[in-house]
Length: 281
Length: 99
Image (cartoon, rainbow over all chains, first blue to last red; front, top):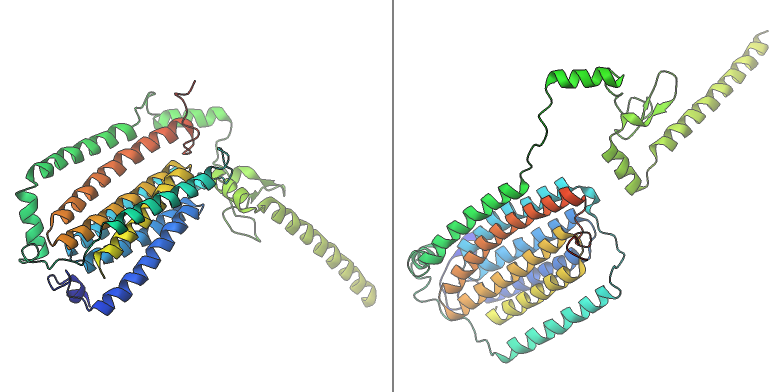
């Protein structure tokens, strides 16, 4: 199937079977539009990125169907591979708290945005509908010697100046990203001696107790139990606490109920032992 | 499939991306919507390339991809800088120039 999709030429711009290409188009179109809609509606940034990946991959297949195999692969490698991973990196750096609140700051913003979108879509569809787009021209000269050769010829002859400018743009972008993401160190880096001194001065020489040492749960959000039987929140990372709050979990309450249950069992066991002792006598 | 169908699909995707830019308030998600719009444009370019039977549209789509990659790099770096300064990626919070 792959060589079939990627092959160039043919009467309709591709040499795909028309029925097959129609079925594929409709599947991909529905997939792309529904993923794009989900991308707008979903709250979590990570889910958004995944839906965007679906859209991009289906567009890549569409490029391949339309006799643009080079662009299809660039789409997969550059967009889905690099750009989207960059997005995911930033989402991970900025944190899981980047889920949006659903409160509207401008009243009726969503409604008006949707209306404007529909109006714009109608405008574009009517305009393009009037433009009388014909069927695909047979690709004579363009893809004659292969898509990649044709593209290379164009890029290095007609479009050679924009291509060179692109390199300047990329260098500028890389430098700009480095400058923007760079943080100047304003204080000297603490040495090992400084760290040790601060630790001793703080009064707590030993590290914080690790989480999850409580015997009934070894999850990382479970607070550690100190030797005196109390739990300590110092053992749990702040990020984990935030996440628990978001998910509505309460490990402290779990520990408390476990401790209560244990006490109850202990009491019953004592009563049982006493009863058994009486029977023995 | 005729190129017109692809062009209509790209219109729909472009509009969805535009609505996303209007509706979302997290700057990352706004960026993703912009990417969606750029992708829709690329689809239209490729479709027109097939319509005309030459490769100019594909070259333009290629340049759009390169520019989009550069734009994303700088945009996300700005976003990181803003987040570092304000501890928030919401576009409502970046209103320092107001008043």
